Amino acid sequence: MLHVNLSYTFTRSAGLRTQLDNPLFDILAAIHACGSVAQAAAQLKLSYRHVWGELKKWEATLESELILWERGKRARLSPFGEKLLFAERRAKMRVLPQMDNLIAEMEREFALAFDPHAHVIPMCASHDMALPRLKEFMARDARLYLDLQFRGSLECIEALSRGQCLLAGFHVSEDRAPGSLTQKAFKAMLKPGRHKLINFVGRQQGLMLAPGNPRRIESVQDLKRADVRFVNRQVNSGTRLEIEQLLAEASIAPSSVNGFETAEPTHLAVAAAVASGLADVGFGIRAAAAEFGLEFIPIMREQYYFVCLKEAVDQPPISKLRELLRRSEWQGLIRDLPGYDIAGAGNVIPLRQAFPWYSFRTPK
Image (cartoon, rainbow, N blue to C red; front, side, top):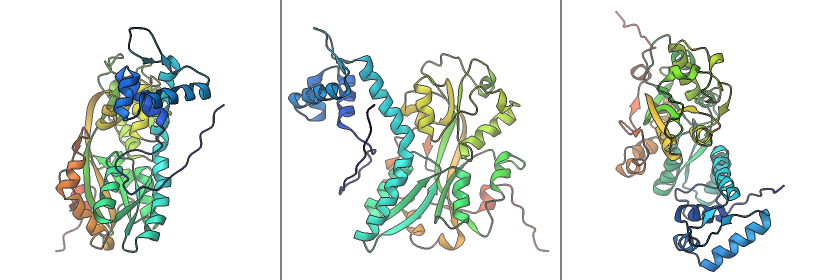
């Protein structure tokens, strides 16, 4: 059995690339896309000889053929090469949030060591595809660092209440009616006069389906079909709460949903499960579906909020973060994420304006 060893290095420019890169998979992905070793080498700005040598080295290490060669035909990955490339993508989608947590902890210490003027915002946030981009933008343009930990929405607010972070990130659907599961989950945790909300992004949530929608899934009602395999989100995540509310509104018992107890930690991991054929349908954001080329049926719009204590909202570094969210440069960085909108980004929203659950008596 082969083992994976991880290492890290220092760089002046983090960019927007993901971590856990391996040159082998860059080569396999390029050959898969180009159908030619020569064209793959040109795309990667490497010599043909280097790419050929790397392929032979890895075939010897892995004891398996990576490329199929047929005279007069395009070069293509072997069945093992295809599986290896897909397994790497799926593994990265599952572990990147944990890697981001580890990297955030290390970067925080190094930032404090090397930059005496750096500001650090300890943050617990529900997983979102725009947050890593915000993290890089803040660090690059304002020397403002997010010490980012990905957790479920409810866990994030609990961490804020315990003083474990300065800022929390969570999302709620537009269905915030009194008596809803959303009210029951959040009202006891968010306190008027104590917490302040900051608009981050709006997102489309919906059903993610295999290309072509082979199961002919049309709505939430299809989740109760015995032939439909569902993949859920983890307990205490905002998306799990939205799924449970949708099932309640449709009078569908969770126990009747095939795969309800099968949970993944992120939108991307859910999309990867559907793309790999492990499930027929999942619930998540449009951008995650687009990342894996999946079909998407929109169900709801939701708002992603940042929340902090009242005394922190006008203090640096939170005030600087709010200013950055209003900049056109930041808003331009997420225009390519399908299903996202930036209405009111950076604006402070009172709890009673965002949620209809709070009532206040008017003094006579």
